[in-house]
Length: 309
Image (cartoon, rainbow, N blue to C red):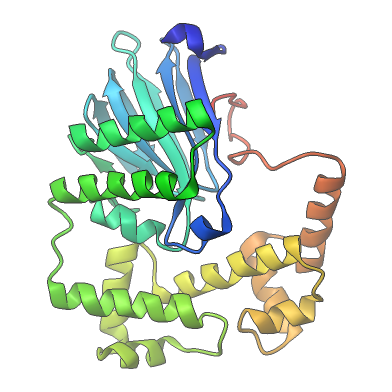
């Protein structure tokens, strides 16, 4: 196995990149890379952040994992998730080195899928959560990516969702009542569909038949963030795509993602992204012209890491 993997200073790594089709991106979530690694004794990742969700299966070994103030011991059969834009850190026990299978994914339904697997930003680790069936399906997806570039989008997406289905069957934490599950999902769906309109959280809560404060509390518990933050993220993600992939004016983009004027959009975008919409577009244009692409994670706060996960 090691012979087919790329070696660097702290691991052996096998990784495959997937290009999602428009069909995949129309769904709840989709995989964008998948791989496996074997740690060397001094393997230590982070602290750093990633722009994507990473679901990680611990196949062998032991280690430790930190995220969002929590610390977790890792052992074979465990499952853990790196949430986007959240600082994480993990390392191996040098005497019982980690071997992991992982895949990165994104999409508006990512948090909901993870919740079904028993993982949330507050609970990113599940001891014994990597079931044999789910691990086998993840390995099948990895082999598909290695042998045929990911196969057809239908096959790839089918395997991806079957992994979460297998995980959800084992998850003890995904036990919300049917009624609560329905109105929470409806509330989130309302935001997913109408985020580009001038909507208020009060209106969303009223649409699903609960009080605003209760809706906000339960939404945060289920999805790891308040509904207003979720709404902002939907708008900013769409704004980024429009800035990168279209020639629309910034004012047109502002209206397209639910802002009544350019000023309020620019202020919100700069607060969220750290730069103005115009500067963001220019930076992306310069990056494409120079043939560079964004890395899979933000720069490390300590030493730069070569590992993809």
